Length: 342
Ligand code: ADP
Ligand code: MG
Image 1 (cartoon, protein in one colour):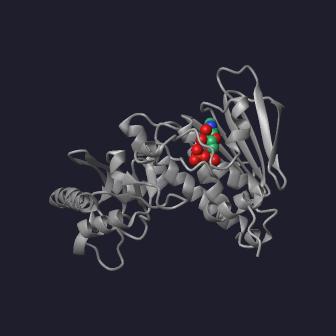
Image 2: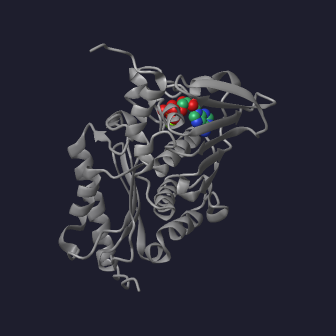
């Protein structure tokens, strides 16, 4: 056996195996980059469930011409420079792998312009060595990334794509979750040329509540009570539904840690425990909850797709969430119980 260094494209394709599971994973990486770039307007165009086209356009900071090549290479990031940064991440990205991975399994074009530049530039990476070509283009300040023919060169992956409808369903669900994490951003999602979601930036409580109604359903928004609690530097806020009103029609279970969407075991366990036996076997808790704490207290570098976090003081966080939510539910209970959702 001879030991060889893998060619860049193959190395990137292997990395892509971990983060690019389906079109929705591409959308997640691209949108998170837009958010990290400070965008407050993000437009997403999808064709054929994302298997034909995924395009994310933002009005963020843009990427300078001389950095376009770097943006597409592996382990290249502007978000951290050392271990200290990694231990207190405030950006959504930090691995510097997404663009390299995605471009190794699709036909990717990156068009961008910074405020300092008077023109935009476009880059794409091709072939085995992922050579990047850069040429002038037209684009306002911000970035557009177009991903064509996802998995065209990895047939084994392409085979696992479901119907356009199913894949788009995953994308729509993802945008819902992301839009609930950033009320200050305007979102538009189009599928096959039709606008599926259009959400204006929400700045007042009323506008935020309206967004919750648009995304989680009117029934959820009517039943859910706003809650807020803090213990030291740990804070929880969001919307919670009284157990008597929790019905199968209120399918809404969204939680976030420092603005990052999560399906966190510890949080879910704490939420269940707070509801305790006030729910019947058929009932599910319904909530949109935001946990905020010092970034030093959370490790996000646990999983390549960043689905999980680790809390340094897991016990403390768990017990705080249980007690904050139990208190909130008790107060809801002592108020007149709301009518069950129709
Ligand atoms: P990461 O997000 O982990 O840094 P990515 O591969 O997703 O890695 O992106 C690489 C780099 O490209 C980012 O660090 C950022 O500097 C730049 N970048 C990517 N997308 C955008 C965007 N939409 N706007 C501005 N810069 C971007
Ligand atoms: Mg990224």
